[in-house]
Amino acid sequence: MEVLFFFGLWFLLMIIDIPIAFSMLIASTVFLIQQGDRLIAIPQRLMAGPNNFPILAIPFFVLAGLLMNLAGITDRIFKFCIAVVGHFTGSLGHVNVLASMIFAGMSGSGAADAAGLGTIELAAMRKEGYDDDFNVGVTLGSATIGPIIPPSIPMVVYGSVAGVSVGALFVGGVIPGILMGLTLMVMVYVIAKRRNYPKHRRATFRELVRSTRDAFWALMTPIVVLVGIVFGVFTPTEAAIITVAYALFLGIFVYRELDFLLLRSVLLESIETTSVVLFIMAAATLFAWIITRQQVPTLIMAKLLAISRDPLILLLLIDVFLLIVGCFMDGNAALIILVPVFMPLLKVVGISPVFFGVVAVLNFQIGALTPPVGSYLYIMTRVASMSFEDVVKATMPWLIPLFIVLLAITVYPPLVMWLPTLLGLGK
Image (cartoon, rainbow, N blue to C red; front, top):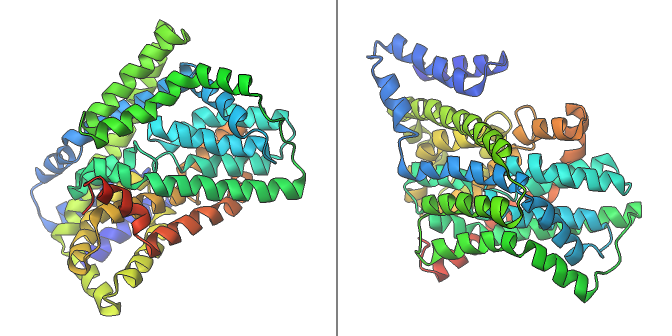
């Protein structure tokens, strides 16, 4: 009964539009007071979440994404992608997806992709006469690739909570991220063909070489990050710091588009964004501690095992549950709360925590595109100057390729685990 009161209060607070971090914190505090517990547990648990070495990567990946957007890097990536895939039907739709795949290897954030790269993409697509529903849908659909292809802020969160190698999670996301890009490109082609969207002429060899040369240093970023982590040159946290240093080097000395005023605004924005993320993590850690102490993981495990012990059936049930949760919760908070709930079940039925981490992150990326809480939807309403309802309507068809990839990796785990196992990282 106490647990039902706890969840009911939290859900009520969210319904009346209390921000998720505050709703978790208020519900947790009221519950502890009701239980007669010492409130010293609150600051202890709040500090326990962010006070974790891998979490140090988050502010640096946030800063790296913002620097990429202002240092001239995203613009050069966009022009490179036009030269590579601009000759396909619906050219700028394909450019949108490919640019997001490349940018994903730098920022680890779908929000940074939607807000930064999305601004460039929308302006270009509108200029060439693409419909806004297509522009918004493909931009948001491709933004979800950001946290799947390494590096990834949500995977850093999952790895710190689950005690799993962040490097293994990063590598596990490579093939699913590529599959997301390919399925989105298929949808771009189908819609573009039906609507008779334009395509650019094929770039000449000289133009391709020039665009590659202009974007070369930017294109090296994901390669340096992934190769460095896989071969143990640096940890994911160190990779985040190196990415920031590299972005600063490009912005100041190579492309010369960063000055002191821009750098100051980027630092302030990254501090604000990081503060929000870490506050949500702190509140979610307290919330998750109460859930664990109330034996909720044991109860859920018993209920699920009573339905089936088949790993595939359980994974499909968990997918449905996570998709529903993603409609109402921030993905990072949901990971902190739910990972301790499902970890005992994973051990019992033999599901790899690395595999589950990639599946969970993809679930919550889809959740970021679904109302009422979908964070990417709100970003796009601002970037595209459209109503929330129109953005939602435009985005819904683009969930289809994402669902296809989610189902594919759920049914066939080697799509996630083959590469980590090949490199000796998977378990």
